[in-house]
Amino acid sequence: MNILQVSSSDGGGGANKVASAVHRGLRARGHASAMAVGRKRSLDADVVAIPRGMSLPRRVAYRAALRVIRPLARRIAALRPLRRALQSPHSLSYLRQRSTGSEVFDYPESRRILELSPFTPELVHVHNLHSEYFDLRFLEKLSARVPVAMTLHDEWTFTGHCAYTLVGDRWRDGCRSCPDLEIYPAIQRDATHENWLVKQSIYERSRLYVSAPSEWLLDRARQSILAAGAVDWRLIRNGVDLGIFKPAEQATARDTLGLPREAHVLLFTANAMNRNPFKDYRTIEAAVERLGAELRDRPLLLIALGGDEPSRTLGNAELRQVPYETAPARVAAYYQAADVYLHAANADTFPTTILEAMAVGRPVVATAVGGIPEQVRSLAAMPGAWAGAAADATTATGVLVEAHDAGGMAAAASALLTDDDLRARLGANAAAEAAALYDIERQLDETLAWYAAILPDWHRWRHGRAAS
Image 1 (tube, rainbow, N blue to C red):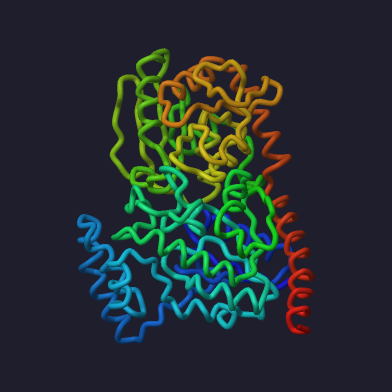
Image 2: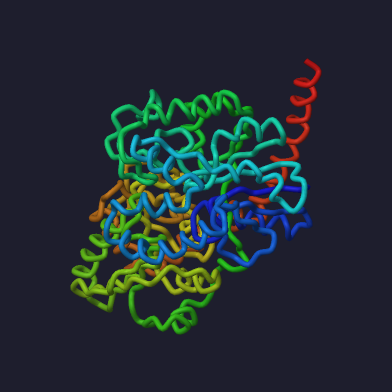
């Protein structure tokens, strides 16, 4: 098959990481695979950056201005739209639309993705289309020219602006009166209803094959404006590379990373965790502070992988933030060095970090948010556990706690840290479950089967359309 993936970037975590893994996996299996991205981060020759549509003098001026604006924009939020406007092919139009609260889709070069591809795609597989690089209005014409598979990674496709609706479900009836315009992707004024109507109109004229990694997100999408353009729904769980994320000797991993062998080690990983509104580092921090006050038999260390704040000590606990790591083997070593993986979120679809922890054989203590309860089998009768579904010790892979429940997270983590046999049992269950359900090769198998079903269906539709 000849497949073109479309994503905001080929680097970083989350949706971009998933899209890049699918691209590389397809290529490894002998398929022609390429990516068209908003921002290219790798040296992969099969990844092409979607041009910004700026002339050479404009690019030179932009780079010069960016050197001045970038450090200021980090401190002055009002300058951030100006920085993004300089990247836009129509800067004044961009600023005008932003000032009214409209989502900006004026990225004409994204309409050339079929020509940018090094081959003629049989199918285009789109991932996150926000991050200001893609003209969403092009979906109508694109889906008439080639089959378009769309994998959802968040809720943006059916909201008035935000990637996740942290308060209420206004997307169900028009996204009026948004309670938080600052949720990413932020807008300046409340034009959420108008944005929602624009998206609804686009989908009504498009033909999309839609998948999601969790039932939670898929169910929401089925009830949304996206349903007007969806002709197929598919659940395809994300996977991880089990050749990298696998059980290994904990002491060796700690020596490799320079971590103390004798300490209780907890891990939480998230990109830009201190600024990410969808993660909940404060609950992690509060839980570890409680654990530090309770567990005094040996040092307690939290590794916050993806943080950029100074390390600090809370009682017997050290909170050590480590910059985001891109080398997969080194990321795996952090999981292998940990005793328990903690995960707290305000919103989450199907976090890959939980799958990575499970694949390495670490029990997970996580907040029961979004699609996370589909990942973690919560051990029954555990201190701090939520009131939802539970499993016995033969199948449990961790403990779920209620959202923002630092006390529950601390209690569950304490119970695991102080019971080596239980921790090992749940870790073994987690590794077995990851091997059975979350191998990247299984994800690729299901994705290719999806493509194989899409192609004849789309060609039948195209033939019938031409005949009429």
